[in-house]
Image (cartoon, rainbow, N blue to C red; front, side, top):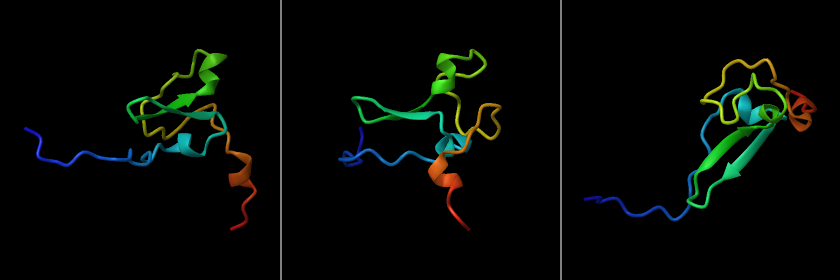
Length: 73
């Protein structure tokens, strides 16, 4: 028996390591509210997993999104 109240909104995606800051990331939302991290590099290069296990701590294809790299500290 589940005593927890049902969630009305899916929680925000958790830390995904490098993926959350990568230009190749595409967030995919399922009909049930789950969020998946799709690596678009997987379409052209078989070295990259379509949905990599998270968190990704190192990646040869990592490229920072422009809006993140343009920030000044």
